[in-house]
View (spheres, rainbow, N blue to C red):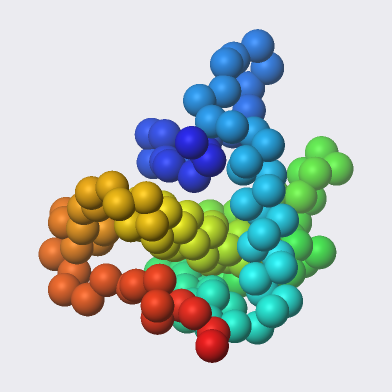
Length: 142
């Protein structure tokens, strides 16, 4: 388990003294892989840009301002996001997380098929009513 499933609607974070419900090393490797996928400028990069645009549109339609972290106000020496503002880095990380989750889903699907094990429809198809799932073949660059 890579730790990308939401817990109470948010990404799970480490808490002092609490046992992790995910493999911390795998999660770290996924973030490293994500930066490499961005630098490769392939299909996953295109997916990232599409998701980032969706997030930017969503926040702008909600009336939020997307600003660099350096423009966030400070309180007690720490930067914070007012209710009508979100940092560019948060939007970037949200889109990156979506890209990582897509990669992991496609890896799982390909691995199961290679092992001759049964697979099921992706979550968006099975539960959200999507009709066209993204396949591993679609995300191959060549």
